[in-house]
Length: 331
Image (cartoon, rainbow, N blue to C red; front, side):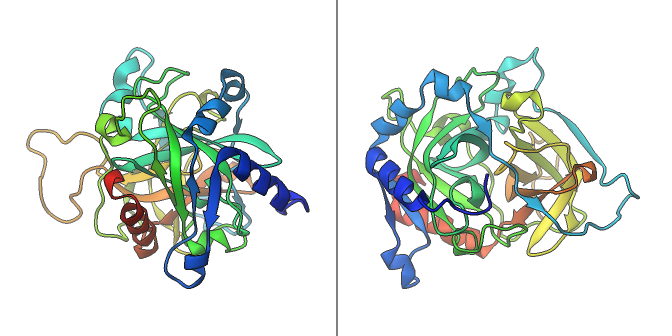
């Protein structure tokens, strides 16, 4: 993904929005009433766009690289973590079991550059959360053609496919310059119903992530991070990393990880999994499967083996509320 726009990008964006029925609403946001968002007026165009050949040729969304010094936490070898497929090949239905089911693959088109893949999490019945850089370039321009597939594993998806209806991102990202670390590299996408004509909403089949009082990510906190990195299993399998959060800069935390492009937008969770009988049901920070951040960036030196995330805070709540206000049936 290029750092600067081509001179004809605005023309290309306009043509693609015209062809796909998308339009940008900025006037009310300019007066502070609404965050940056874009609306899809033609679900059929999105469905028709994603042919099997396009899906097969999709590329990983580049994980933005931060050229920022990193503290030496465990010597020169970087940060410690464990890394594995979310579920085993011998358990192909494991990706459809809650909470594994709330993670998914997000396909998109960057006008003039091609098709890419990110990761996302189901937060409300028809609202998913991803990274801001998976929906816009940070220079005031949206991408297009988002398609969400929850729990997909090696091309098999048992919970359906969902086109986009409306996309919101934070002003921090939308016109923040497109650099990382960014204090709120976050976006929410309102989904259309399942593309099989059943009218079912994604969250009916997947369940939804927990939402604790935000911000809810502290240095030293244990985390589970999900995503579809393309350096691991060619973006085909949801990947799990467990690590300890380390405070970074610009309202971000970092963890040790071997994930790269494609992992963008993947969820960072506290209390991930299924509680055991006898586990505490109350206490401090007890919300199960609580989404607290989304993957935002990696580092220019890959040997660091770390990724970073924008910590979800009131700015995330603002765009989530805006999406729900504009689409109450989605929440």
